[in-house]
Length: 365
Length: 227
Image (cartoon, rainbow over all chains, first blue to last red; front, side, top):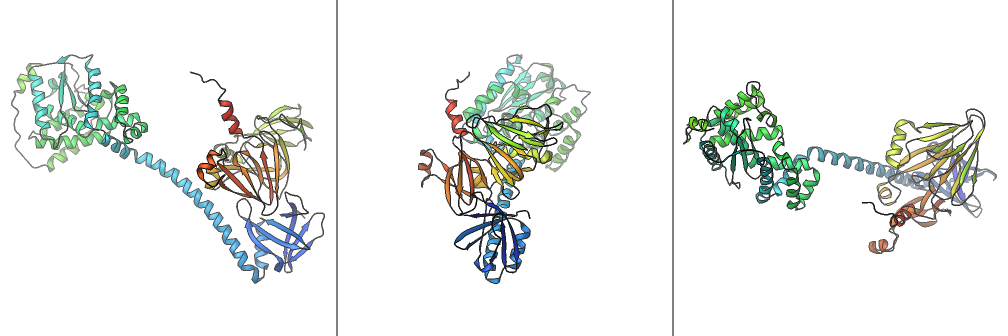
């Protein structure tokens, strides 16, 4: 007869004596090796739950002056015990069973909470990272933003030829001013720099620094096209897309640093990024956002949005125009379609022409 | 399988005599020497997922090694990594031991090893981590400790308080609660005891006379800091 329980008592081993417990109608039959078998009537028994997990049935009794405790975990014996137990023992048994169930469900609850919170954290990090980034960016003031852009601009311009004056510079500044005047509560002072290069590109840095290549001005078929590109870039600045990319690139540490109120730390980190800022790619959603708000800004500035759409259309046909703009601004037919749809919703208006002659601008390049 | 502790004390070793075909499970890296009749097999107890969960969750080594006397009878010498006593326990199929991670040195073929999750409070505060090992089945179980092993026998409902980092193993009939060493939180930590486990019998609790993490902290002050 193999043992199925452990029996404790003053005369038994400290770790418990293996014993065989069986349930009969007369009571509990306990057979301990080396001792005579005993049958203990149910009326002598008291029951509780016990053991490391509180999932064992602990049966106690005093027989012939000796206190004995049996730890039962065999489900079959426990079931038989519950069936055979007299009514007066039932309340105790039910209470014990309830205790065991509570302990088990408690453990399951904790496990569920632990697994749930780990999954929750992962989900928050996965889907909430954009929100966290936006929250962090909102904490950064414009005064702190400028040194970041300034440092990146300084590094970029070090190897470039800057066009200081001329009709091109005046035209670009004129367009930018007309756009900036239409931005409500504009905290930025936009500074446009024209760089002599055949590259067809323009980009914006945090803090309001816009860089336009002469290549873009040469390829543009009119001031509306340049204005379209500038409006798009200006909106990257206003929507603080650059900062978002920086915070994302620097990662969660930057987010926490900024949210904890240490803007200086971020500026230091961002300055280290330096020239890489220029090549930071914006996300697809950011591009779309800048497209649409760029379009609306053009409308407010009474500049025809056809230029922007037309220029983008030519960009989608990338083979014709070998342009660097595409590497930082991936173009797609969907983007153009979205712009056309948005333009159709805006009220019709007569565009106000620019004060300069486009022919003079291109001739001066 | 017959086993014997050689050189009991700080630097013990276990000799296991195996009959032809018999095997012993041991912590990986525990084998010191063996007869040429003994083959070393790496085996993942409880299948790959079981082994993985043990590795990930309890910090126990991924693989146990199985030393099998496949070409005739032979003997195996086993030793733990840390200096300290070794205890041998007999599992009879009814009793079960809960063992802190790293406490397992070797066990007979019939010994079943599984990772077990503790409740949140025990896992967070007990100092044993969320997962401990549950040893059941039949056969000899060999545990190792840091320092000397002290056995505490508890009668039914008898209580005893143990510093959580000194625990080695305890029988499944005992249970414990985590509590502060002193009445207040500050006194608990300034006394250097922090949290303790209040065990309730019946059953046996094995404790070790040295605290591994305490020893680690002490020895750290002598390690030169590299640039």
